[in-house]
Length: 182
Image (cartoon, rainbow, N blue to C red; front, side):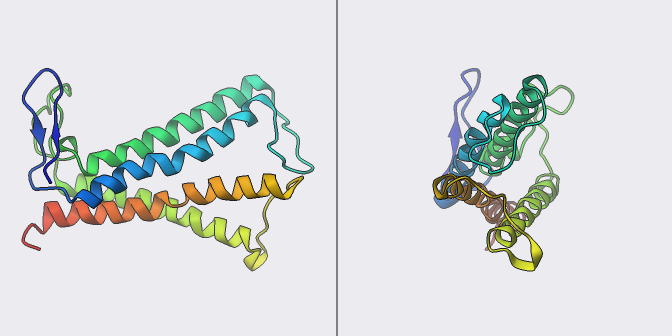
């Protein structure tokens, strides 16, 4: 399946080699698995502790709001970058970039940061598993009810799919760009 994008100002752009349909699905899934935790985090900006027992927000809204909203926006923006692994702009510099416009992007300029990002996020997954199951002395935050704990575990668990999904998508990009005869 070739990905064709209409920018409204020029011809349709497509990737050098066909992108597997499953890779496009994974690229769409990444921002969706990051979104619940981004939304769950927003009440903290206004001092609401989302059921954390014995915790109170010690910073003012003027500090928490930009931090929490900025973290949520940054998380989603980084998750949306996964589309570069299945779109033409992950292979060729877009026309709006001065000096470099239209130049081919070497595959490892994309692969290295994507793989490192996937490994870092996957490392966070390992920390989450250790904390959830109280392994090696790690522990989770106490919640005021089982429902708050279930909500926190669910949204965190979804976000932690991001790392493995990004690594899978990065490998697909590598195979498509660096090993086309496979």
